[in-house]
Length: 209
Image (tube, rainbow, N blue to C red; front, top):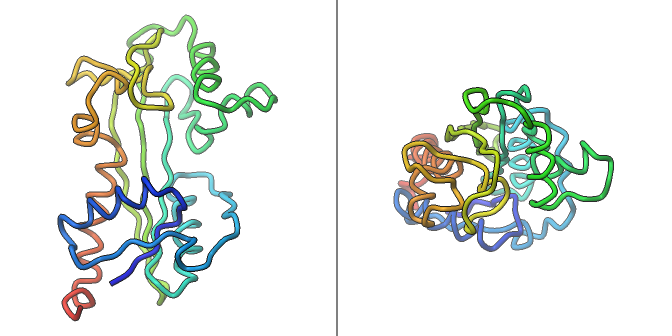
């Protein structure tokens, strides 16, 4: 059985294929390009789940099962920001074109200046949505909780990882190994939950293959 992930990123495609292979070895993951969907998908949702569903519906227009994901950082002291705008946080807050990881982290630190450690709680959140060609749909969510440090630590990872401290590891997500990160990451948790839900929802269809 084939499913379409609303992405053109080979790493994302490969990651989903690897994780699904553990529970659904007869599934092939295709990209948007593979099924001839070349336009941009406008993410207009106000939540991670809404954006994930928008992407999944676009992918499902191919006639296959569509899968979409959306993720970001939610900081308690900022009322949940940057949230769905995590990738463009600096651009939105400063009104400039800067929206790379370094700029986003600088803006985050500046907004949290003076906030005490006990109030710097945060979560990485990932939502994965699935839409079947007949219109059925579901979403799952994965989260990992931590806190935002006052300075960078670690050279691995990307995005907000150097500032996100994970207490059980006593490290930031930029200091852990890829295996350690995958074991607890929001995206890893969401995809594993998605795989189990997809298996339950489409069990009869998979059994025919």
